[in-house]
Length: 315
Image 1 (tube, helix red, strand yellow):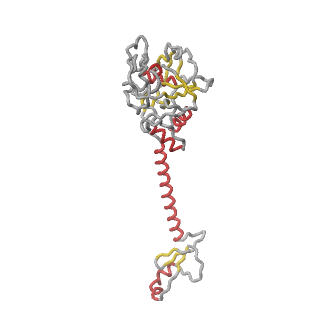
Image 2 (cartoon, helix red, strand yellow):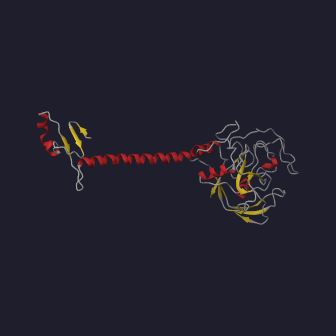
Image 3 (tube, one colour):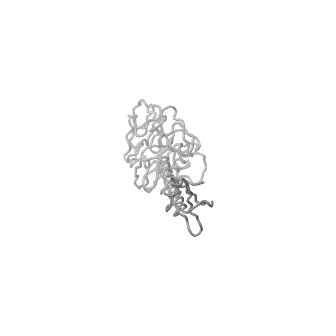
């Protein structure tokens, strides 16, 4: 097949007897035109000499290839960045604190020293998790009819939360990291003091925390569903919803505390249960479950309408 350029047809490898060289055609093109003749001009290729035609074709396809290569590369990079989600971080300083409470369920109290790390300012939202589902083909969790967007994602099991964390290059917090970050330097039942009001956190405030020190905690109305993240004031370190809204998965297996001092603990070294640690209380739990030291647990593959999670990364 020949390529036509006006009256000139260029054939890269034509061997017909009527073929003349391009040089001859250029010198005699007017005479040929008067005679109404059309000629094929061929530039023969050999292993020693590459014809002008083949150079042109090679250059043409090289340009097409490079354009395709860079165009595809940019598209993949853009798609990849769209699949990822933006997460706001709070730097948590290194330090030592007393973990647990005198309660038999939350003790024994023990000293824990932690290296610095960063924790997500908010609980992971539906918008963030839905982007993960779109990118990985996972089924999106049910929002209970409360709405998605900026509300904390719910109905995700520990496995789902861990998969999201890995997809973002992060991880779930350890139980010690979670309590340390929640307390933000406080030693009281809540980082707000001895009481937790419905204006400070989303929980079942019909049943506030009651002790001798917190006898004045009032019963109040509550939303009875999740609220958009950041709806309440943050703690002293700038973290939102550490009390209430949704329970949060931690990386640890649920087990008894060690009474000795520890540095960067990661929970039980062996799996004696199928339960993972949950922290923080939720929209449907009483005030006592929202305390900084309160421990809870859940089977790792099961999601609940009152459980979500947040992330950490190295400092």
